[in-house]
Length: 199
Image 1 (cartoon, rainbow, N blue to C red):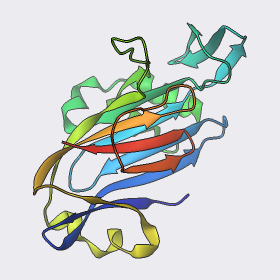
Image 2 (cartoon, rainbow, N blue to C red; image 1 turned 90 degrees about the vertical axis):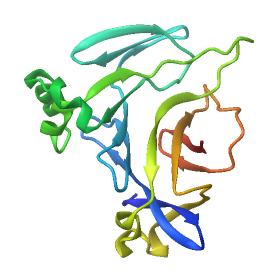
Image 3 (cartoon, rainbow, N blue to C red; image 1 turned 90 degrees about the horizontal axis):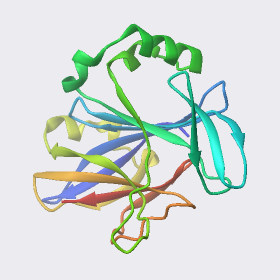
Image 4 (cartoon, rainbow, N blue to C red; image 1 turned 135 degrees about the vertical axis):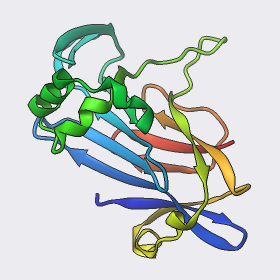
């Protein structure tokens, strides 16, 4: 899939909000990339390489380490990271080397990222409700109006935006950890359904 865009409708105008791109790397792991247009923020969700799987646990690679976790059959181990100007102080050569080994096309940018394994969050009643990936504050401005983002051929989804500035939350729903919240805005990706929740 090439880059596609999520639009927002506000005050009888259309704005580009989010750029979405999916990739498959040489190690066959999939990646979902989400960039917030008009900001320095982007989110990346990575499928992690599996070493061993049984009916009750999974062993996978994360930052050159073997991690063992209890896991449902066929559940995909994933990690995620946000890249913002706030993370500039986290740069390390080790992160760049790891990104090179995993086959990323631009490993140097991974030196500024704080990467975490996706964890299921348990609700009070014991159920799961998707993976909360975090949020970004969106401020509609001229950069959201660039024509290259607003071509109908590349539109994934349109949201009704409540105001000029708002918070956009992202939740990933997978077969083994479904999101049960209330949101009509979602897209299908190679890692699961991505929900957009406006606050």
